[in-house]
Image (cartoon, rainbow, N blue to C red; front, top):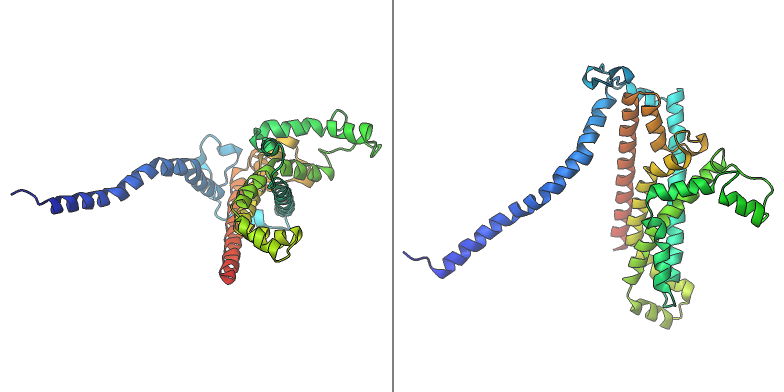
Length: 317
């Protein structure tokens, strides 16, 4: 008996509907496998290592490392011990560093995007030039700053002392208290173009009708920025601030390339601190415990930030 045309079409639609979720999972499979290999498996291995006395004596055979339980975690959070106090100090330095970089990058990106929002000559060229620090490879960019910040041969001291005559003393930018200033400036230089790019894209999506209506109501440029631009950029800024904070908090390339293995105490960021705790002292169990604590801290911080911002968004609606 021949199939009716209506029943054949219904079967085809039912088959396509059944296969569509399977096809979606099949297309996602390579990304899921890559995520598993690159992130989840190393994280699981790191958690396992944090419960072991994994020192240089067990490098050849990790499974032979004795079980340590929570001993590594107790050592890491004991602020009365030298190890715990150093980790806490590194955490405060990293928090200050991340906050300064996020605020500086956002402000520079916002001002640059605002200035280039109006039609002007060479606007496209300026936008391209502003994105150069973000397009440069991180290692090449930071090693160039390392050369420029050298005390005797660096361009920064040459400019400040020999050309502008602002001071007679050639400062140590890569040692002592100024090392923190140096790493903050270098990191802002690296990250502000990303903030500029995101904020500029957000500004281009603001309807011009809002500015015209605000101008008709007598709002000046400052009031238009405060009443129109900043509120409309709020969703973009919330995501941008979170991304920049996580990037800078976990930043390893900038301090390691700028200072080398001997990071100054004043710029002891937690990523380098954990690296040194693991590879300099060969105590991978303790270093892994610090990494797990850092992961939990960032997860809690991110969850709190998202919860707080979502509540404010619901109240605004």
